[in-house]
Length: 127
Image (cartoon, rainbow, N blue to C red):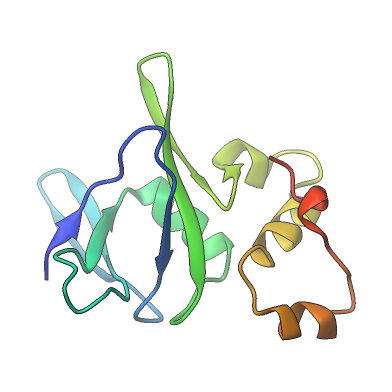
């Protein structure tokens, strides 16, 4: 398994290969290794998530087969992540439940969205 690193300002779509990441602890703290679906010729089929990124993926209730867009960003010298366009502050701030619900639908199959009780367009997702 070869892991890739997210690059600042380059959003990457990934599809989870498993329901849960492998997790462990080392001298630096907890680590989370997510397997992702990849082309047979792709050298990368996993990524390590920080505790915050792991929490964000869990908040999105992402399981095997779920596609997410993850972007590494910088605020000054401080790196942070966005998952489906939402930062950790978006997921914890005012109106977060509605934002999360809309972001969860971002890469759903069109048939699944049409069956959803709440109709969402791309204009509804806060980017």
